[in-house]
Length: 410
Image (cartoon, rainbow, N blue to C red; front, side):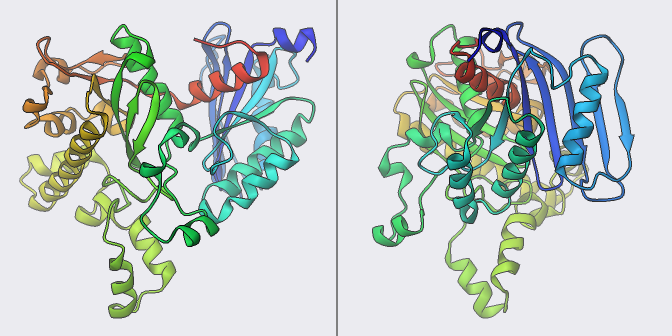
């Protein structure tokens, strides 16, 4: 790496979906965001790019019209950044960091991308068919745009690779499991890594000193048990379907339900897949997956919405209790992501009744809305309860920058 490259401090973070690209440009030396944006509905006539520069005060810009593919999407992103003096040809750009959902057992750290890495990500497509193909497309597009620049893959599964075998293995035939890579991988790893570390900071301790239960509650939801900065258990498994009740996913379910639906209801494998991933969870229980609307309906006396909420909370409590048992000692339970950060009734309901475990929520603290990490437990509580806004893009940028520069970012 040249001296100029070592001095570069900007990282472009790309999160490529099948029809969208989310991006952020960050300056890691200053710890600041320079621009954020989204290209959506790629491949349609109604494509839209929303770009917000965070330097210079020029305000949000939008453009609409057909964006035929990811190459055109990234070209449009580059044009917007160039218009702000933040072009991708800048010597200040150190690397591009890519979110990759599934890294299997091989990728447990941020990884410089080469052809061998791309081939392995592609081999993992059968266990992440909805995500890895889109992630690959974004990587290849970015490589074509800046072939000279380091490209780094940061994997959702990596943080959970520290799970012991007894937590990661399913109790099925070992030969079959190994032949088809069937095990618990976990997801939302960048969020769990960031939030568990920030929680330790909030407590005034190092990550190695604390045990934390992290509850990432968004439309997708997952829990993790983090001992001394290392994940020892997590709720998602081979796929993001396992675990908590989510917006449209069922979470834990008797596997025999799938056989029953095929035999009795005549449903195909694809039908069951759609049911469990897109028509279950909160939306399957009450027709809504927006927690704000569900709470509004509860306040209006809607019993179906109330039942959906109670099922959601019951599952959440089960995981808090289970991970308390796994960890043995818990220093903090922390809520994050859209629901976790904003839905005070969810936080209160999840903790109520767990006082014997040293958990409690202060009503006034819980009601405060803030974008800052904060404690919501009373001063006398034996275990801290916290809200820590997640920042997956910053975590991806941090890991990318540390890898290519050889310098850690705090």
